[in-house]
Image (cartoon, rainbow, N blue to C red):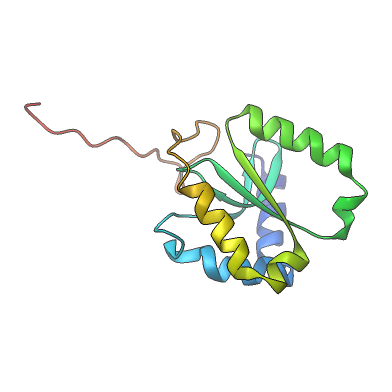
Amino acid sequence: MGGTMDSTARSLRKHPTEAERLLWRHLRLRQLGGWKFRRQQPVGSYIVDFVCLEKRLIVEVDGGHHAVQVEKDARRAAWLEAEGFQLLRFWNTEVLRDTTAVQETIRAALDGGHCPPTSILPRKGGGGRRPRTTRGT
């Protein structure tokens, strides 16, 4: 991950939209089914709004500018899906008006099946999680 990408992600975390702030209150601290989400996380050459790495689920909260950048969003979505991520998109107004329905949609996607962890994203602190093993088995 490059320094510019890190500083952009950091700036986005410091200045979330109202909808992002509201949704983060429900996703943080493993509040949604015990799954860990990160916000404004670099994935390849993109920064995604929210991601659960364990389930390879990306949640995007879009403002009005996404209505005019359809081709760019389609290329981005195609790349993320080719990397094995499932992508959920919500409009800001959906999150603000019906947060419960948005949470239910996210929970349904999380319950849909387990995906292996990604190799393109570093763990916080730069280390990787090692699988637990039991001796003698």
